[in-house]
Length: 329
Image (tube, rainbow, N blue to C red; front, side, top):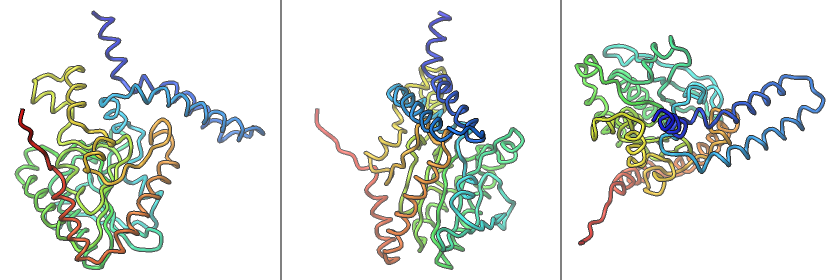
């Protein structure tokens, strides 16, 4: 029985699957800072080897593996994208009602010469930072801060770009007392009428209303190994079957249809952004380039539309979602 459990753990654990990739990546990193005269050739060979190893792993990836990749502690976070893709980021703090929420980063920056508003969930790298950021679980003041920046962007005609990466809105008593559900709902109502282009990018976890509170707009882009779901697989398994064992969580993850390619087929997301071999945490530079390319193309397309047309299409986009058919059996 113990052997069976170990096999199941190995099957469900992406961190075991990626061990060969990590070993190759460490060799690449060591060569990049070395003075080896054949450094470029060796790095190219190792990158090719990494790609081949990744091709072996991809067919084995389950929905639970996708969740683990999206939660990977080395995956790039919102501030990493801001530092890589934008210039002169000026962060704003507070909702002018209660407090500042470090779980959400918001401010203005330059993107390819124009001013944009940027909003995103931010996780921490260290234990201290994770606690300070509340594990990227926003309180109501976080959503109200985000909306304040969005309305400022509307006033000045700045496009809005959001990065979604949260396990969900914070479910604490204080958050509920300060109107967590109302804050998210009010954001959705206001954003639906915001007279400026809005692009949402799911870079990691797209957790329920926690992601939806800043993840609604004109175009929804999603990284290949991120996930977007109404609830976490663990939460789903606990509610439906009162079981958070690996088998129940695996079944819940599959049933939720949280993979990017599935969501693209259903018309929930508008563009799937490819990730490098080994996923985003293996190659930041390529990930940033891929996101930058799709962001630039999408923003350019949206800015060619008149605002009334933009709002009409935003409305139609939402109305197209959730359509189903009934059949007689």
